[in-house]
Amino acid sequence: MEARLVGLGLLLLLAGTFLILMGMLKGGGPAEGGGLILIGPFPIAFGTTEKIAKTMLALGVAIVTFFIVLHLLLG
Image 1 (tube, helix red, strand yellow):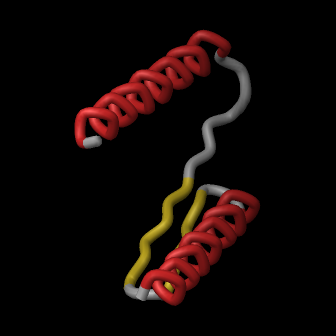
Image 2 (cartoon, rainbow, N blue to C red):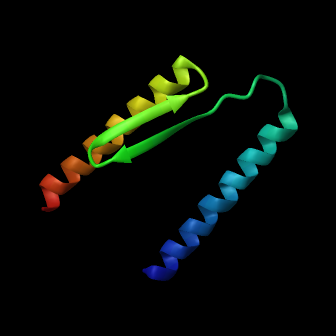
Image 3 (cartoon, helix red, strand yellow):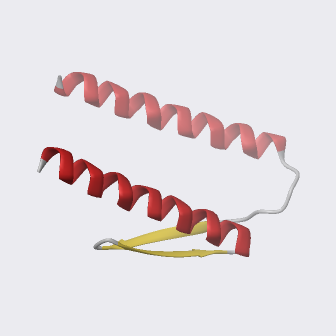
């Protein structure tokens, strides 16, 4: 099973690299970015635009909710 996870990790890494390269070749629009910091169950989101910050916050809430449900089911 460990070998399968390593293979999956490498596949995801290659897919991400490919998508970044394709985006660089396409060029075009303005660059936007954002980030998410999880301190315990509290997400802290930031971004270059309000839309990105809200998206990061929604992602943070979804991740925290997922882990709380996972803990309740498996805990």
